[in-house]
Image (cartoon, rainbow, N blue to C red; front, side, top):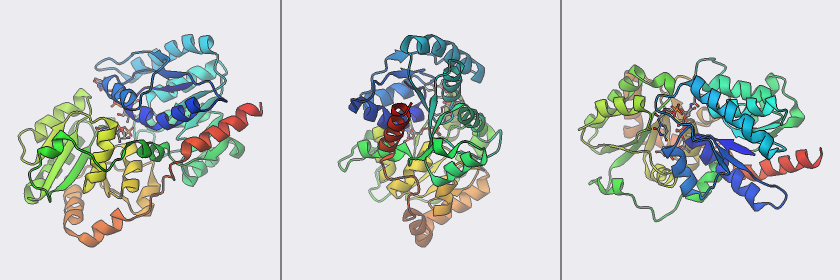
Length: 366
Ligand code: UD1
Ligand code: UDP
């Protein structure tokens, strides 16, 4: 049983679900909590995924308690009905943690895809750091994307024989999406064919409000000073994000705020961008595969592999730091090339195959 609820979980679980569906050794049951509604449905439609169960739980202004309560109670009904041999969850959302807890309560083993990511800071990112730590405490099988995430799990004394390094399924997903002949209406709004395209996303709870306002204002100021730059900002549907995004960017020349993009469009726009500014987790994994430098609008990252490789740079939300780093990347070709050509540390696009092999071994060997 595969359980997911938000956009990034859906994108990164998709390759696993497709692999399970293609295998005659498994019966795949897909459960969506719909912690996100429209942004989840975009992914389901793009990848032709058809959930067996849909909790439809999203509400505007939902609290962490609301989501956790509803996932727990709905899962308590579905698990006895389906009687899965294993529940698979992904990443670090409230859906992830609550679905893992619901499975644990019924003594169903949990497989955690994207296990072992850590900042070791309880509130950063909030609540994701604790969601993933709790999920790893509950899990039986750990699909760690990198050696470093495996080391994090070993530091917490999770058994080595239950950990498999798989690569990140985000890289698998890119193989379904990136095409040569991509067109999108927002590209038609950009008049300068030589424009440098900045793709921006920002949504984390710890950045909402003033940090987001400061960061977006800094980007706006750099754009004003660099006439060949255009910004595309597909703004997350959270009202807290929409408010600040429109307050800072509405009416600003060469800045385009648009609705969240379908994942196929987002990956293709990322592939055509000059660089990316983001506080997203998934985007930090995808950009190195596409050869795009990323300025990470956060003070910490659970994806240090990209920083070490040279493809990600942490800039936080201090406007002066953002302005200096962004201007340097736009004007210093050597610096840009170093980041754009750094190796991708997140895998080879075969993570889902490795997950299935490990599942076969575990379930076959029971
Ligand atoms: C959630 C995850 C976060 C992940 C992010 C991915 C938790 C605690 N947070 O944060 O880890 O990085 O998803 O995007 O699990 N909304 C819509 N339509 C949608 C999606 C969201 O209207 O399709 C609005 C709703 O008003 C909703 C709000 O966004 O209440 C916030 O959604 P929520 O899932 O609570 O938090 P995210 O910030 O999206
Ligand atoms: N993404 C998308 N449309 C957008 C912005 C992002 O499909 O307009 C994809 C992106 O390619 C990545 C995922 O959504 O795969 C990241 O989701 P998000 O940033 O919401 O969450 P996080 O990864 O931070 O948990």
